[in-house]
Amino acid sequence: MTQQSKPFEIRHQYVKDVSFENYCFWTWADEAPDVDIKIDNAIHKINDDHFNISLQIKINATVQEKTAFILDVLYENIVFVNQEVPDHEKQVLLCIHAPTLLFPFARQLIADITMHGGIPPIVLAPVDFASAFMESQEEKNSQPSGLIH
Image 1 (cartoon, rainbow, N blue to C red):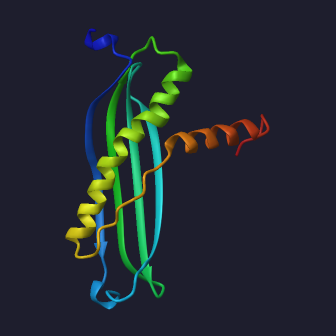
Image 2 (tube, rainbow, N blue to C red; image 1 turned 45 degrees about the vertical axis):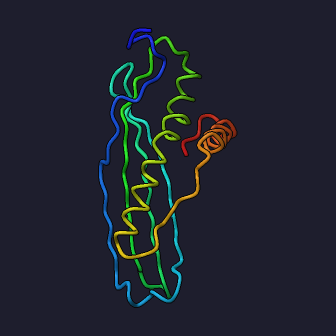
Image 3 (tube, rainbow, N blue to C red; image 1 turned 90 degrees about the vertical axis):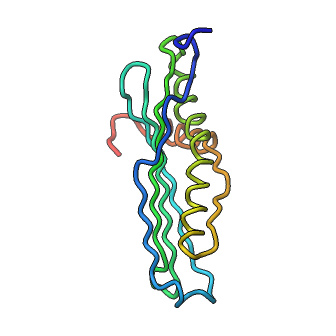
């Protein structure tokens, strides 16, 4: 099988941006923080067969309404999708498979950063990108056409 006949391949994977702010750890060491985690992914077309997949994970932790720490990770990959792949399959590869393959690396990075920040490592639970994709498709299909949301 030649390189171009593969239906899907990760070409590059990298940390695009990381920000970690650790505020006054010693003031909340005896109390577990309230942790808010937001995960978002985006797809950007580079050309007809290459796409940039972004996975952004934002974590905000507070104790007694004070910020304990903030962690923002933007992890990306460049994927190749053969132009012969039908559009519905391409959408599944880009919206489900690519972020699913990317997530464990971002998850490990978050665990390492928090551990090296002097706090117990944040180990994120696996994310079901398939369910999230199906839910977004249902929302898209349930919106009345002709309206901008």
